[in-house]
Image: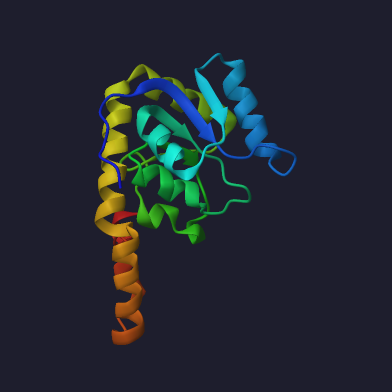
Amino acid sequence: TQPFKSVREPTVLFLGQAGDFHPRRRFLLDAIKKTGLPLIEGRAEPEDAARLYGESQIVFNCSLNGDLNMRVFEVLAAGGCLVTDRLSRQSGLEVMFENGRHLALYDSDVALILLLKRLLARPLDALDLARAGYEEYWAKHAPKIRRRQVMDFVMNGIDPKLFFRSATQT
């Protein structure tokens, strides 16, 4: 756990793989580069990644196959302003986190670029999004909480629907 950082570098950060098995991710990273937005792309050890997520104005994510990947949780836990692709309802992403409140979702390359430009131009909006995502993660999705919820389900039969926001909030 690291403290939330209010001072951010005006960058779009991507940490991860973007090789042959990730053509859509590579396409989107190249689209970001072509616009001249301040993209930092690379890899990092987990401790360094958490620090970088919390220091960057925006963290870009693109799922591999429409999956809810660990980067979503890593970025939110580190206090990053997460911009990620919209996933199917079955993934659970929008059941756990609210678009525009805890993170920002995009549906296309054009929507992604517009969203990144808006959040870079409005750093306080990016910071508010990051803070809300950080608080939501630590309040409802931290490992200690999830372990307790799983044990409560296994031992006491508590309905898993209680793990998420109510359906009326999605």
